[in-house]
Length: 500
Image 1 (cartoon, one colour):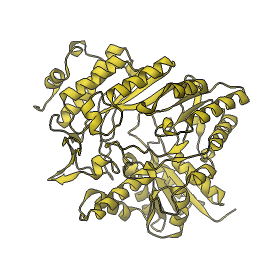
Image 2 (cartoon, one colour):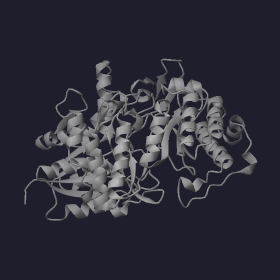
Image 3 (cartoon, one colour):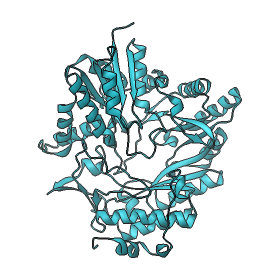
Image 4 (cartoon, helix red, strand yellow):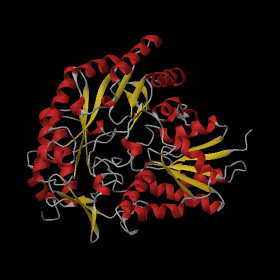
């Protein structure tokens, strides 16, 4: 048995409605490359585990436990990752803890931008990175599959793979040739996800998105901006493996935008061929970019087994769509839904409010667009200014808050200061209530944005007869008939504790 060992950890995600839907593929890819090099991997999958610190303590009491730990974390997972690191250091101060994942990557990218602009170290991204560096021994930014080996060599510091010139930044060929995520380290049967009653799993065929949406975390990070695509052979082989080993016949593609791939139709035809090969009918789900969607794509997607499409339409207001640099117009978004329905797809519309310039009128326009286009499902969230997004990176400190100004319209978005190492209620929220807004505009206060989001939920779900439990099974949605025909200003003014 090799003496090389490392314990990899997925922290809990209590902000999610159900933590046992999709496994974390990023850290399982790290596990796979380490196993390939002869490392012994202990894996703690703490998704959905309430007493997660006790589980870690019990592991560390084992005589065979590793003294090296790797933790991944998105921004909302950081408080739990910090707690895990404290437990590790309390039990054994000589243990080495490596932090990777989207949060440290995007904060580090934002910090580099601050320093390039000549801003002082009191700025929020640099301050956050310094705080994290004081807690964890080594930070890995960007692609971790190659960078992890450098991280294991050093005692402290940053391994920056979020740079196209870095030797650790994955090429298309490396992305295709690396081993599949080490799903065998996880209890896959404990994860429950179905697409039209098909036992389903997530996979990633390409990394990155080239578009410039102002709200999107990663627009300023090469790791999430530059497209890296796996070969069609690699994708098909992983799907074949998932079918034969785990009996999966449903696949959720977690690519940013499937139809950014110019070879998409070839991939779809190969997926159709794979179903003929194994004698099964697959069901697939994925994200598309509205203005790029066309009938040829739709036809091939339907033939391959897609029945649901998800699109970040974001807003039904033209000014907001322009401000956020979505590239798609209101008419583009409407046309995408029309194409989808023509090819018998169900559409989930992903919407958001709280953008620069958001107003009573823009929220009302979003509601009207949803009622006009009639998606089969929708999700409406309040924007959070995440590191790596222009909303975060280009905001200027103004007293106790930050201000982002659209370079197209001059509209502003104001943001509270958030301690990402300890706070997590800024992230999304329970659709049945419980949202908190850390942003506001010249037209809507934080409280009014929460009321506006709830208003869209009530109005659209009731009039399109979309049951609330389609978002969260087991939770009934109560619609107040007395408020059903109110306009957005009337609704907010009746329920708001803050004058507009």
